[in-house]
Image (cartoon, rainbow, N blue to C red; front, top):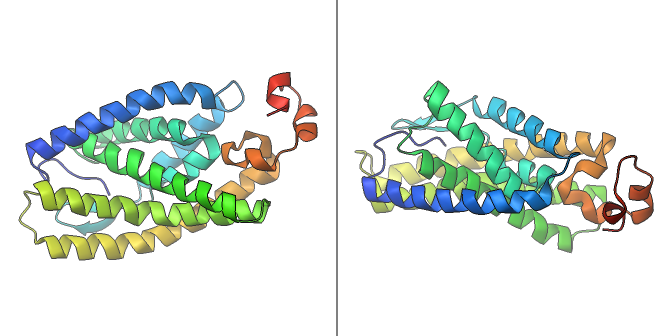
Length: 234
């Protein structure tokens, strides 16, 4: 889903850049409420995992590519604001060191993968968590559904941006068909990987999973070493 330089016109790129900058500024404040000395290392590991899976690209056409995003997984593990920051760091490193996505398109890529994918994935997750049974299985189902939705949602927003400011010599219908079809399939893979990784973390350290707070009982938290009293009563 990395958008290259010159695929969108300057006004569209500037607009998404401003939106991305504002989102990151909000995320810097919001992440303070999500991270502590226990979860900060998990955020780093998650960012490294997302970086690795995003390096596996599937060509879509006209210089664009599709790949796993990891936005929903990161949001469920460490929180949505932290997920925005993790995704942004990954995209900056990929653009600067690996030329994966253009520098002038960095704002567009952060908007698509850091804002839309994370927001849509976590939004679906929170909605389903409230509707499904409050069990481990319900949580995994909600996370899988959120992960599945997040990828085509970001792809559709890209199609909308291309309709407004696309400059590549590619018909809009062809872009929509290519992006939609490929990213629905990628969304299935995203859901499978999200459920697998989240299930593994829940098996060993459920106390670290941001989205699993509703499954933890105060008595269980109180027995965990290193937890503060105020954390044990959340």
